Structures are given as structure tokens and as C-alpha cells.
Image (cartoon, rainbow, N blue to C red; front, side, top):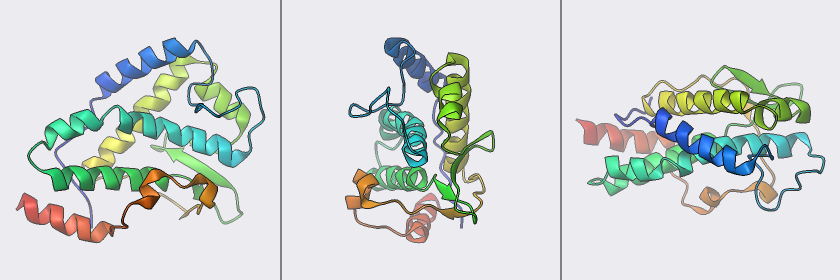
Length: 185
């Protein structure tokens, strides 16, 4: 069963916000959260979680647009936010040999290597924008009902990395899809 909506994330708007954000950071670690040690060493899971922050940036900067689009349908708005959060939460995958990675729109596969992270997210604004454009494209594919086919299994994270959406009521993807399809008929 596929999910589909007529809403798409405005790439031009998000990239504009992202450019402003990275200019304010002045080539620092743009995806670092407040408690991250910029000079410290990261393990692979820390790096992959930092890459997931790119998806969070897009969602955080799109929520108002999503809300405006679904102003007359609170349930659909909530469902889409939950689906996007669940999709993003499951981005870290594990191969059969135990290596973990994130695949961004079949454009780039991050394996948690700190040098690869620095190349794409710290050292070059152009590379940062390329990655963000692909994150937006991937999320738009998901919203339009053509999600990127993910290989391998979702990496189950330790409770240390639980997100706020983990505290929400678990909703099955299929039940949400049935509701959305009923509304669109």
C-alpha cells in the first residue's frame, strides 16, 4: 500500500532557509545539536544521527507550510507529520554484515565515517546544498506516494536515541493509509 498526498515540500524555500542557516554557522558543524562536542570524535551512530538532523531540518522548516496546506483537516496534518517522523526515524539501516548506513535518495550512502561527514556537511557549502536538495527530493517522493525503496533492515536504536515521536501513540502505517484513501475518495 502506498501513501500519497498533493502536498510537496517547497525546495526553493527550504534551500533558502538552509543557506541562511549555514551562513550563520560560519562553516562550523551545521548539524551539531547544542550538546554536541564539535571538536570531539564521533562513533558511526553519532555521525548517522547527525545526518538524520538534515531530515529534521527539512521537516521543522516545512511544518508551517504543511499546516497551511491542511488547514481544514487536522487529522490528515497529524497523520502526515507522524508518517514523516516515522520515515525519518527509520533512515538508519543495517546491512547483513552489521555495518550501518543512511542512503539519501540513492544519491549518497553515508556509512558513519567522520571524514565523509566532514566532506559533505562541514567543509563545502555546495556539497551541503546538494545533500539537502536530495533530502527534500526524497521526502517529496515519499509524500507523492513513490518512496525510495530501502534495502536492508531498519537499525533499532538504543533508548538513548529515542525521539519525541516514540512517546506518541503507535499508529500502523496501513491504518493511516486506509483513512487517507477514504478521505480522498
